[in-house]
Amino acid sequence: MTIPIWVYAVVAGIVISAIMAIKTGREERQLELETIEREGEVYMERLEKERELRKGVQATGE
Image (cartoon, rainbow, N blue to C red):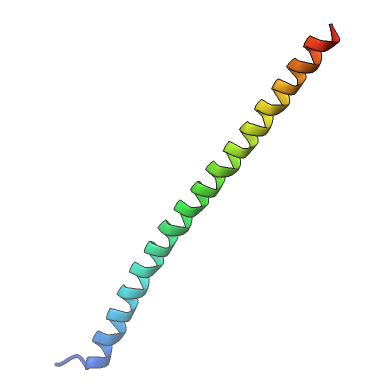
């Protein structure tokens, strides 16, 4: 009993598709983490500026 060549092609396609899906998922997750990190840095900078501004206002108000 021999297996037709198209069965091998279908199996290879499924394997390649699974590998590409895993690779793409990892890349997307990495990009998401980088974006979240950048947004967090911007937020922390904004908080620090606001804190400094409040300290300046309190120092001049007293």
